[in-house]
Image (cartoon, rainbow, N blue to C red; front, side, top):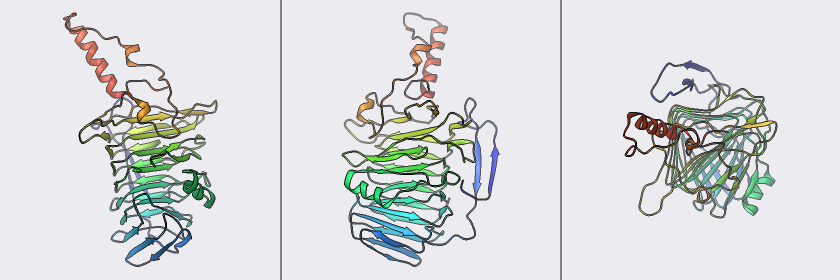
Length: 369
């Protein structure tokens, strides 16, 4: 797990804490050894790195890979990627063996990928504004990065199951369709994740496959469930901040082995897919279980948000690698509807009110498996 000084407090009844959901606050502090990116070497593609208070990366090829001795950004420091276009990809791999700590500014007009098997901490003073962002505690080989260019697909592997995790306390904003993709052993968000005109993919598992469809939008397919948990909050996905996709979708994929006694999702913040504009705009928030195997468990627990818009046609918003599954049961199976005009009674009104309330708590009106 990400090694840091931490204080965890379980709070009482707070707004947005429902049912048996635990609400926790984790306070993180940067390590004393934080420094700007160092030891960068372009190992694939073409580009030039200029270091200083502002670290500038001039990318001269559509895809470029950089190996770093360490990739950190201090508060007040800037890292800027100047890329050929919004679809360009800059792969950054931190081989320091300690978590990447981002407390400053990261800017790019295209896609920035950051991999560190020890984990990534985005601090409260961080401001990330890029075309697209992928952050993971998994590993990617040179061959797999080449596959992304040739076949629009790359396989990520787990190199160190005893370390990792993705923590965001800052402000992350993207501007292209690829949006934000976070893949790790756990994800803890107390900051803001905002994808403008793009999707947000949050995936927790060992060894997922990141794929792209014909339109270049990132999607995630899980292949192996977690065998152990490093989550300090007890929840694999802990959200007390804001997760918002503007004219985009939110997909949450979690897979773990049945031997783990964990809470899949603890949400006390905002999870919102927003459509702005005219015409046919469909947004959805999907908590998608992976295919169940005998030794694996996948969770589709409640995500409680202030605004929830569910597309009625799931096929139009599916990500590459997602397999539609029939819900275990439906609200209609639990509580039948009654006509208040025909049955003018308080019992009928109460019944319909309870049904509407349950529908808000359940994903797309369906119960978890």
